[in-house]
Length: 247
Image (tube, rainbow, N blue to C red; front, top):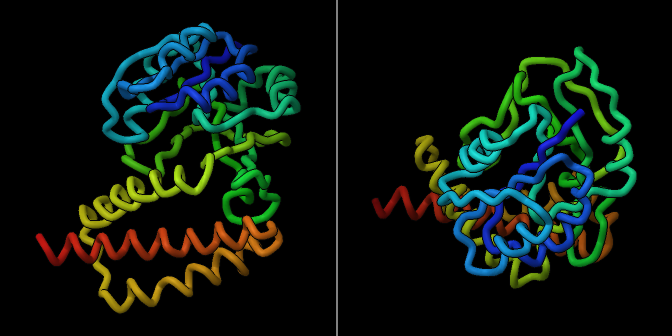
């Protein structure tokens, strides 16, 4: 099975120095660079990647662009801040092509402030990351993009470690961008929230993330993650409220 790894990036030089060494077994690595101002391109080229420049207009379309430049049908899609475990690499390399299986889901472990989360919503799901593009591709969603596959899917046992945030400063950089994108998407869908619902949603989301999703078992990092997630949803809906009432 020949595999093309596809990564989209924007100022990800630091993360790529950690993630790319784990992709040396792939037959090629495609990096779609959103005109980074750091050394993203130089780092990518130093690992033998094929780099394509494209202005970001959504996660789905950006990933579809990268896949369109792949030389092989089997696509491994990972983010720049994700690192394959050695066990997962061995597991993928041991796969014998099966005409009945067109895609594989992989478990992803969330890593936050140095803690590998064994519990919580972000570490509870399998994500479709390895697939045959002859049977599917990413949709064109701006955020929360996903692969649509017309065929059978199997699951791998070993995981990808997702180092989503270097520190809290990095978290809040992403926080503002993602809440803005999320609010705009909701507005385009005609969604509305009252100010009272926006404010009252905070404790509900905190209880959900901390207790229902069992982040209390992830130590103090789990508490902080739950608290920040509750604010994420609150701010997203406050931005939606603002957009609906100022336009």
